[in-house]
Image 1 (spheres, rainbow, N blue to C red):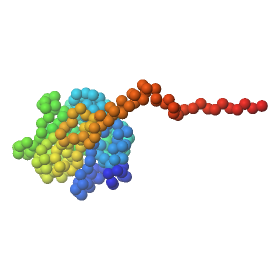
Image 2 (cartoon, helix red, strand yellow):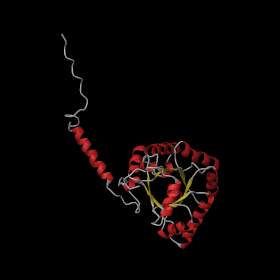
Image 3 (tube, one colour):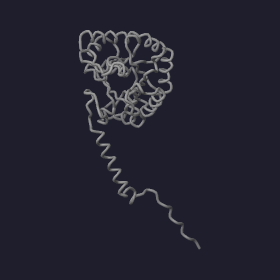
Image 4 (cartoon, rainbow, N blue to C red):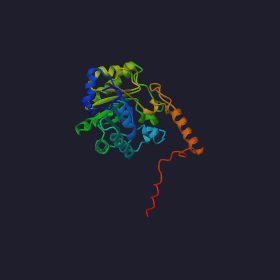
Length: 281
């Protein structure tokens, strides 16, 4: 598949594992609606993460912790409808899996059944290994999100880079191996040194996705709005490809001028009256 083609076949976990074996990194972006999903798929993006970052990018909240479960299920289903052949990852929001394992399994199952997700993602530490194992036994493909975990922002404060020291690298590797052994189908490492992610990639046998985690990762994901230059702030690993925010403001100003000047539809309104029938004698 070229970079300008929609996936011709359904992208599955087997597809991604095949890319890993061939040494071809897979691209991944966040997505929150059907229209955007359709266009990202047409551009060749194989994996779409319906991230709880929607709490910030779509709903305007301060923290990702504020993403409601029902909202996440709704937009996951929307992305699936827009890009049915992409691999869709549903992001389990804060408190959708922390209370108890039975609730976590039910909620994860809802992402597959109601949201149409191909896998769910959870922010996890070593203590979550039993939950990952239960999800695997329930037949729910699970991506273990390790490294920096945004759900901890209000507890920890500023984001922390993983793998600044040898001890930190070993700690990250240990968690990664635990998650793999528990049954995670993939790992997502957020905000780590290249040395740390490289070590994880060497130590595990499942695909590793990086979010600002270095070039060794098998796939890479960033927030769509950061990539398009529509965020007021973006992390250093997500440099915008275009100044989309300024472009949108400029086009909005053109629309304002078109309407306020009275030019809109003044000469080319598409709907016309039917011609009067000719009188008959």
